[in-house]
Length: 332
Image (cartoon, rainbow, N blue to C red; front, side, top):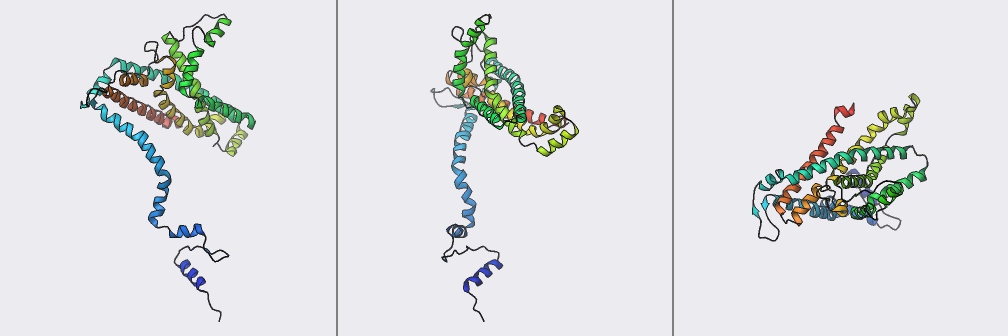
């Protein structure tokens, strides 16, 4: 009778128990990767992912969670920076913020800024995304996508400085071109209405490409066979858009509107670089109002309360957008 090797018996026993064993190579030594996997304890296998995501998670909590707790704490305290320790004030800061004409005006102005910019950004972004989807030239599509990244990648403060130079009354290229066309000069930086329009146009220019790229990615998920089947029924572009493309674009629309709501409410660098919220308070959004209270008036308690109220305002707006776009009316 042929003797059975010990290694074969061990392999059969392990296989019967449902266990994996390291395979031997031609030299009779186990693979290093298989051996390390076999030697790992269940606890080590469970903790292994945390060694990779742990540092990033720690930094995220340090950068995001700590300032939030700091603001929440000081929103219930009266504290003028550099003037002694904070004292508990309860809801006094929140009451002062909600009854402050300056804060309510800034909040209203921010709401107007949102009402103007969001629909325009969504409309232009959707038009650009649909145009890219219809483009059959891959090189042209790639070139346009690269160009769309430029406004997003440009630092907002740099955008503000460039806009300030372009719309300068005496030296700006906008007034120069207007003069060459026979139009009168406009005091863009001295008129409240003109300054608000200038900031609005800049915001739309900077963030419309973001919406376009998000919606373009959503259009890439539309199955080609479904669209081809509908093309056999009708050649109408609007029919294909309403019944095929728009349902697949809805998650991208929701994501872009939510992010744009957040980006617009917290807009600071660009507006501050142009006119620091002026002339007067014409372009003073809620973020600039909070900055003036905290770092010019040094009233940290009131600024913290206004920051919390702004956060609540942003969350409510984002939830309203999501509920509206996913309501039965939107599905219909």
